[in-house]
Image 1 (cartoon, rainbow, N blue to C red):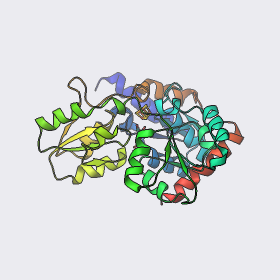
Image 2: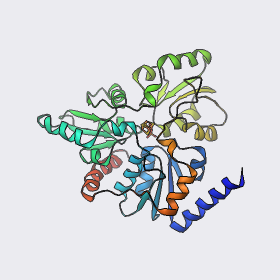
Image 3: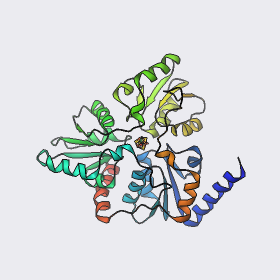
Image 4: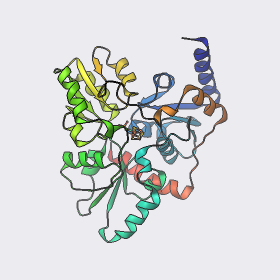
Length: 312
Ligand code: 13P
Ligand code: SF4
């Protein structure tokens, strides 16, 4: 490894110590960031870690809504992220004021609102409970049976949960721009090439793609599922960062990352805004920092805590 890269890693670890910081990274971060992190996981695991940490500073290597979630559940900590512009197409598809207006216009329905964690603090503050891809089925199963459910913002995840639970829900029409790019045809072509391969897909994929999958699950569950899958060839349909942990933790299997010939899985442009240089800079400057109005934070905390409670 070039000396400059080594120096940068050492400088990050040194600063981490001086700041009494913890580095939390999502499974979609680049390998160099994952390797430096104290914890790498899915949105649910990261929320638990953020709540439990005793560090003074949380450096969140993921996208903005994930860092915001850390601040909501552990407000006395300084929460920083490498790049403030690391957004999410799902978050953008459901602006807080739009959801607020929708709920006002439909007040007579008395919706029980379930929000996928990929949304802003403002949206979280308007909801009854939050879910992640790792616990969405469990959370919907625990929803009151006498109220209609509004599920925001991911229509694909919502449709998958309806299939799993049999519970009807009204779905906000948001989507992840990365996962809806995968097509049934492109995956079928890979399956034709590797007839013994099994397919694991994220629930943000469209139904056409999910129907081809042997397993649909969160990024964390992909690790254990791939370890135990009864095939040596696995087709992984999600964001490319996932391959780093899979290569490390499931070394005996061949990961067929396609569905397109040109790229391995697909990159989320927001996740990939984070770099080691920016990670160093945010630890050094303690900026960009997540700052939230206390009334929004407190209102968003209740449905997040309900989720953590209901996921146990
Ligand atoms: P996970 O919670 O499954 O890691 O998913 C987060 C995400 O943003 C998927 O696109
Ligand atoms: Fe958002 Fe999709 Fe990127 Fe996940 S992969 S952070 S859902 S845009």
